[in-house]
Length: 109
Image 1 (cartoon, helix red, strand yellow):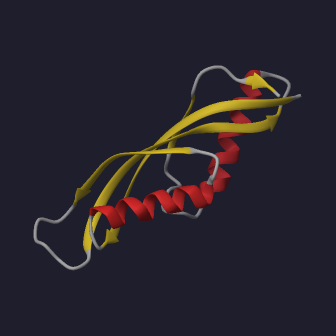
Image 2 (cartoon, rainbow, N blue to C red):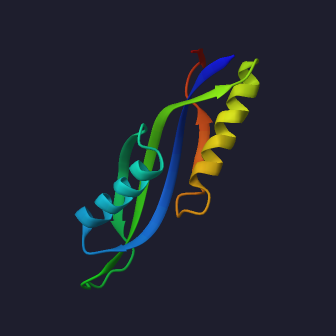
């Protein structure tokens, strides 16, 4: 049976950028390329070094929310399959360490 599992994840990455807006843009663009259907919310953008530079280091914290469609008979199996799908999708990227959790009840589609 096809189920849609609502999930949310939080992550933090460090990256080089030309300013706060560039750091925000880079992270949002990368996340949307990996999971276009997700809602991306940037929670915090902070410089990691005190001295100003042309290219600075930033730490960006963010939250993702969305639904992952999977085939599973039981809700527990659907959640496991959804988390596995997301881990595979983000593997090999700077965002692979996102902490995922179920976000409400799963639904059948």
